Length: 137
View 1 (cartoon, rainbow, N blue to C red):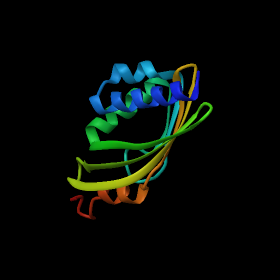
View 2: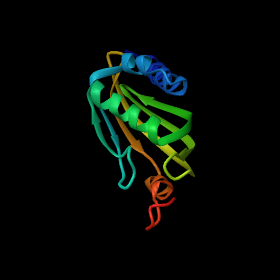
View 3: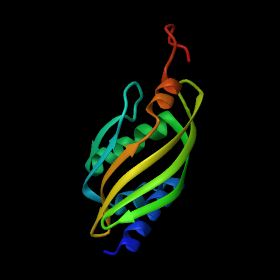
């Protein structure tokens, strides 16, 4: 696939996220997708593999965070697409807001995303997810 086609596939992926279209998302990712979200002390951190791992990630995300994701720039070379963006949202458990600038490093092969590695402000997300010693936000 061409670099332009890979960028369009990634744009379609983000559009599916924005619509909340799980079936559309699954159609755009490889069966053996690997999505790595760095960090600790918040529920989305970790390595998520395959369609089952992606489905679990989406379920956890919908139950734990309200977010608006804005991809702002797409930089591509071959099968790699870097997406520079911004997100704002709220952690449901704490009702705390958060914002972060991020970069997704995505690999696209044969028209499907095979790998996603997020580079995000894990501190902002961990702070917004943290409760005080009494268990209150």
